[in-house]
Image (cartoon, rainbow, N blue to C red; front, side):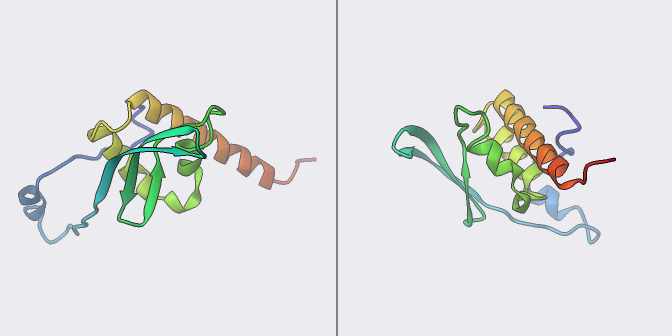
Length: 124
């Protein structure tokens, strides 16, 4: 993944986090995942179910159209700032190959770009 795609994130221990001092705020996030033998729509293997903060299920698959599933999830506006944290965690935990993360991010970016172009008035 290119450096422009993700800001620098670093995994640190609790002790290191507590040493950061009063100018830093601490945030605790939980990402739970488990093997999932199920199939989406009765035909797409799911492999893993991921819960981010216990509220959002992240689809760790890409459909044949290369847009459905994870890329579509990344293109949703509600993902917002959590997107970088999610991509970082998936990479660090080796839950998805880095090239698949890059492909999904590129597809999501392209979808957002096309949506913005539709909203802009045609120039005369």
